[in-house]
Length: 337
Image (cartoon, rainbow, N blue to C red; front, side):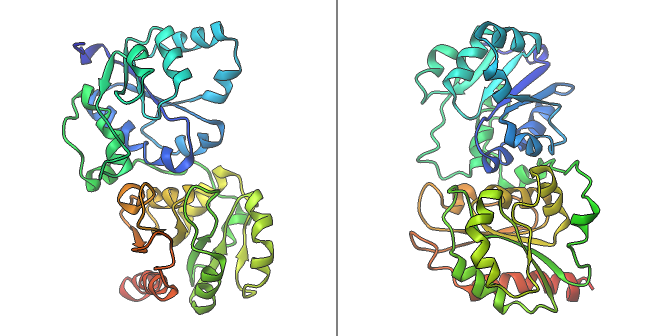
């Protein structure tokens, strides 16, 4: 199929999965704006990822997949037709979405060759195997832009430069007051909702105990569900530690993370939000596919990671993590004054 790029005015990115996956897809929007000047970029996502998607300045419209699914079948088709979408990029393969976009008559439908349903729902197939690739998830996503003229694998530095992520939420005063301008404000996000391998509360506790309270303002974050799991552990921490688990909406959490000085977590959504927000970010990863850092490392100008060299996180010591975090402190208060 020959593509006349001048006829593509509205592109839909489809990624209807988790927060971290969505964050690593967002640079695609900025690339599309470069490849197709003047185009509109919409993003099909889930209700709970809406605040993340709306934080990307290169995305013009959010389309809620959860709301779309609630409509009768014929109305789903009509709804998409009325959006006047010229191209759909199936970043996260979903049979229902692929079928619906074909029925809605979207003229360019890009999918991967390794999903059978894409062979009859898409008209532009890209050879892409994530399972065996040595590329980062964000680089793999961008391979789907080959039909639009992006022929080379993008270096991670270039992907980071296309990271147009900025919180659009004004942080309420009550949340702003949690931060101490005379200390290094460190968010510790110990749980992962099963999306990443966890370092263990004992390790986090030992780390926190070793960080001087006169230098670090330590804040624990987590979801409502995680609040219950963390309650007893938080009770055992020094009184100077602030418990913010279950106290923020996702919109507020994104703004809260962007206001902090640094964040420590394993491979989970807030880790990628922190990296995209441009703050100091440290991810903890095992050396096991497919959750190794080569594939899922946080991407940001101040983002880094530690890799265990083992199939779990036992190879990462509190001393290793403490060294990184103390370097952040020194950079803020000693090197930069």
